[in-house]
Image 1: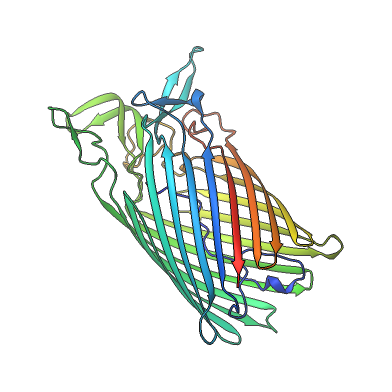
Image 2 (image 1 turned 90 degrees about the vertical axis):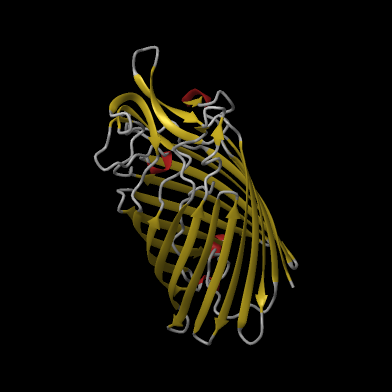
Length: 421
């Protein structure tokens, strides 16, 4: 199953390398590369178990996801101001899947939400391949990319086009980009029957669904002086098709069953969301080089909003400290979002619009993460490692709209190396 992640809607374009000692990710190079680069990165991701907040639907394990990722990238010059990039990634995932939240009465007589897990360990593999091409002119750059991602139950094909222009002696950068994707979902075990009763194993899962997306972004940045760069971007995207999660469900305390024509207590229904989602984001960034410290302060703010009612604020602060060929980067990130209009931990009665989801990613919550990254350059080699710890929660005590028991705490560790020739 393809996991939703926070989508980075476009990269800020900036001529940051003109600032001495400043290293900015996603900086837009002003000229075609003159060397080839081969990169490898390994990442290990692990979600913290929450035994006291979870139940197993099958009596099996409730351990959360562990993911291992291998990424390879080769890029470099072609002929006459042209450049290429080829990326290959593999991902292995295992763990139990959060399914739905149900109310449970504790020893004090209080109702609390409890996460029901799949109770089965999910083993999945994903492979993605990306190709990129760029054409450089004296004051502009044109590029396009193509990507394919495949796993046992989710396949995606995507394409991007972008154009970058430099003005004002290349101190000002303007960027436009657009992207499209076509996804097919074929949930595992959907339509599988068990026993002599010919009963569906997972009756709430669809056999096959599709969705598409179209996105666009526009960015502007300006080198104010030798030590300060400011930038911003706006992004917009529209998703159409099957937007629900086929592996998740929702609990309704008092549900009308149309097939039997009767009300049922404690019913479980399929996760159901609107088939269109529109979203927009505003990104602001500042890069300040501090010569006396041989360091740079990176500050980022992002506002994100969807027509499902989910709004979020993200603040990033990072300190890039240089020590000769070695660089250390501590970073802190704060995130807060509101819940989707139709979201509940569980439902007391049926909704008129038929939308149900207890997915923690649609709930109201805040999160704080800390990352430490180190990088060492030795000749043509660059080695880097990073560690991040992420914790999340909510201050809302409402059992229906308050903290979702499936909220994730996680940590990840990454190692990588680059070689230029």
